[in-house]
Amino acid sequence: MLTAHELFGFMSLDLSSQILEHAYESEKDSYRATVAAVAEARKLRAAFFERKPRTERHKDMVAMLAKPRLDAAASNLIRVWLMKKHMPMLADFLDALAVSHKDGIVDELPATVEDANLNQAIELLLGKYPREEVAVYLNAFYSMNDVSWINLKSLLESDPRLQFGS
Image (cartoon, rainbow, N blue to C red):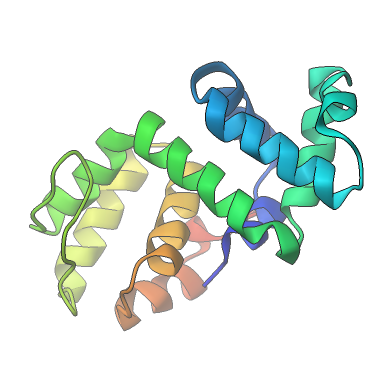
């Protein structure tokens, strides 16, 4: 499925800006690490890059986070955003699948999930949360965890509600 840098490449500018704004306002360490990674990739000093107006800086950051070499920074930013801002969505998904967790964090995921349970969990998320945020979460869940749920992969590839730009 989509890697973190690909998610930044496909998600709307509005959502990617929300992710950066969340990090800027609430997750200073993650934000500074992301600024440093982007500045280094652009061969700039972070202090110089930070002097740019925030909207312009964020636009540049999104463009860079969509590149493969910044996948680790993009992954960290998405993880922090999901775990800190969208923990209820993570918990709802895992609860619907009857997967034991603590605040959306799982020690061990099952090797498979039933189609009916997965479909029900996705319907719950789409009924409760913005479609694009659900698509980011499910893609991140699939690519950032050691799961190979073929039915989730199939839905991510075929369900138009889980596609970007639709």
